[in-house]
Length: 69
Image (cartoon, rainbow, N blue to C red; front, side, top):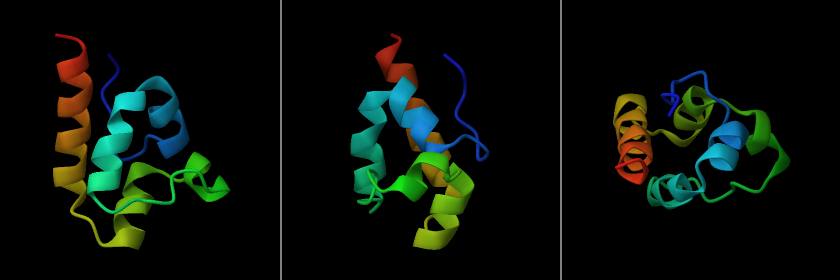
């Protein structure tokens, strides 16, 4: 599985890894269906919502790793 990075778009990541929606919601990213979220990067979403980027990336990648085990 391709690693999720700060430059990954939310739309692409959600499309390829639907299981991460729960992680994103847990961080308070509730507007995942809005048009901007489809092109917004993980870094941009973290910045706008005041989320620790490193922690978010760690949990997103853990969620995708768990799916591949």
